[in-house]
Structures are given as structure tokens and as C-alpha cells.
Amino acid sequence: MGSKISSFGKTADGKEVSLITLVNKNGMGIEVTNYGATLVAVTVADRDGRIDDVVLGYDDVTDYTLHGGYLGATVGRNCNRIHGAKVAIDGKEYILDDNENGNNLHSGFHGYNSLLWDFEVIEEELAVKFTHHSADGEQGFPGNFDITVTYTLTEENEVKIHYCGTSDKDTIANLTNHSYFNLGGHGSGGILEHTMWIDSDAITVTDARSIPTGEIRDIKGSPMDFNTPKKIGKDISADYDQLIQGAGYDHNYVLKNQGCGLRKIAEAADEKSGRVMEVLTDSVGVQLYTGNFIDKDSRGKGGAVYQPRHGFCLETQYYPDANHHENFPSSILKAGERYDTTTVYKFRVK
Image (cartoon, rainbow, N blue to C red):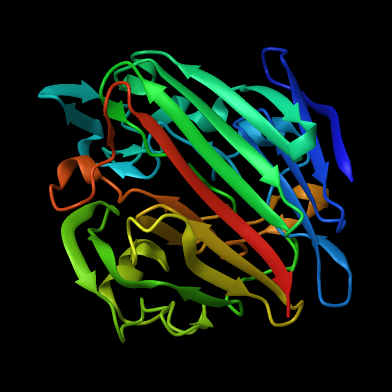
């Protein structure tokens, strides 16, 4: 039980990168790095007591800098997509990086996932606090945005992620964690046999470029519906417009009980290992992504070979492209106000 700081290699310009390990009294552990405030590993027991790492990732910082996919990263200042790579705030238009088919994805070429964050270990809380001063104009967004991302490992086997920040100008604030989970172990293969439940009756419909159209669609009884737990692979190949366009699930689910604070919004389970992951958040949406575009035959931790659909993401968030749709909850953070949101990934066995 406790914490440890070790080397995670160096960036291309020679900067030292750290890996911070936290272990609770139950023997569950997490590893995080100040490169991208990234969750590198989550080690948790199965029903027989075997410990496995259930998060896809790499062995050192070099691979994180060379490969895409945002594995485990903190994504911001805005996660997901912005249509046309531009946004209007207080009547002024701001031009962002066009890094995906004419749109802005995860804040462009210099997102928070590729920054070297300052950090401190909080021993008494078994936590690591990452901090970053995002200067006015960084990534094209207005405002000096001071942000903290704190990972806490609790004795209830929770990975608690708390995001907090303020800006001196109105800006967009919409951060998430982009971990790919595989409850059988990060190198165990596909996740289509995992069972999934999501507390949602609707999605934000997207076009062929994964940009929301503005339609909020009732999905009850459709292949998108996870209100009744089902295997991820059950309907993933269905003849349904959204699944065809996304090559699987890559959609924002409109969560129930918005405004009610931290509540359980999703659960994933792996019958073989017995591991279960609950997701709690105070956010309004969650993106289910089934790793449809993971690089084929990419090499992960310990030489594990990753393929498409070897991990799934549950990324808590405001709805994608919210700034272009008045019927979506706003992701604008007003100057001087506090951005404050929490997501919890809680593990148990059955």
C-alpha cells in the first residue's frame, strides 16, 4: 500500500517523464504518468484472485508519443469533435486545428494528451494531482485556463478522476479520460463478449464524419440500446445507420438524471474473469467507443498485440459539438466560474 515514483523515459526533446504508482490496501493498483496526465495501468483481481492490468497502454513514454489513439489520456480543452474546426464564443469566431476530415478532434494537434503536466503526490489521500496552465490562445481557445486533474485510488477499489479549473475569459471546458478497458486483461483479445449497460434512452445522431446533426434520437429497442444489459457484440454489426457509419459504437449517449450529481450511469462485465466495472459521473453524456479503429497489430505493454475492438471507452463529457447546437447543454465555461466534474471507475468481481 502506498505510492512510488519511477522513470517513464524521456520525450524527444530530452525531458524526463515520471510514472506514479498507487496501491491500496486491497492490492489494487493504478499507474499514471505526467505525460498527458495519462492512466497507464489499472491492476485488479479477478474472481480467483489473479491480478491483471485491464487498461490498454504502452511500456514507456516513447510509444505514447509515437502512436495515436489517446490511450488512457486526459483529453481537452475540448474532447470529441467540433464541426468545421471553429467555434463562436461571445460573438467572436475562433479557428482551431483541422485534424480530422475538416473538423477538430480532441482539441487538435497539441491537446492535453501530449503535454507534460506538473504533478504532486498526495500520500494521505492516495492521489496524484496534475496541473496545467493553459494559456490564452492555446489550441485556439480563448482564456487563461488553469486546470487540475486528480486521480485518487480509494479503498473501495475506485479510480476517481476529478477535473477542476477556472478561466479569465469565456471558453470551452470539456475534459474526459480516454482509457480503453478490457476486463479480461489488456492483452486478452476482443471485448465483444463483455456485457454492457448504459443508463440512456437516446443518442446524439451523427453524420458520416461523426459530427452531430442536432437530432437527439430515441434508441429504445434499437441496436444502440443498452438499457437492458447485453453483450457489446450482440448488435454491433446490425444494419443500422449509426453503426454502419461508425464501424461500430462510437456515439454519445444522452444520460438520464442530468443535474442529479454523481450517479451510476454504466456498467461493464466480463463473465470469464468475473470482473465488473461501474461508471459514475455527474456529466450529461458518455461516449461509448468500441475501439473500432485501434491500429491493427499495434504492440502494447509487455508485447501484447492490440487489434480493433480489443478495448472499449466510456468517455464522460458534454455532448460533442455542443457549441453548434442550441438544443444541447452548453459546454461554455464563463469567466471566473469553476469547471468541476468527477468520474469514477469502480471495480468489483461477481
